[in-house]
Length: 163
Image (cartoon, rainbow, N blue to C red; front, side):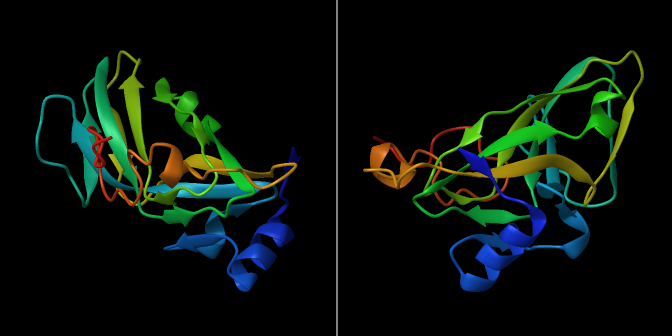
């Protein structure tokens, strides 16, 4: 496994092997890219907030979807990391690995562990995605293995592909 640096990410995007639709240059970091908040949905609600600043009550769970749509080739996976500026405010984010071949926006489960309400501006940088080269291309991409969330857009809680 080898992590990509900023200039390698840019080079891959220029070649078309990696796509970040909605890319903003200020989101590029030395070893990744900061994904931004497109929408926020509070637990139990059916409607998402897509503009302004969302006030998240203390000690409550909510969901966040990204502005950016990522499209990974079959030899690149990614790690997701909460930005420390949000961690310092008491935000805990459920994150995982993005499989090779995944395409779509990303949805995160988030918990405001603080005793204070949280102000979360739509469009703010929230989670860093770090790309990593695999030793070889996968035999079957995410889409072929399960693809449950392939091509998701917006807050997506249930699989969109029925296996």
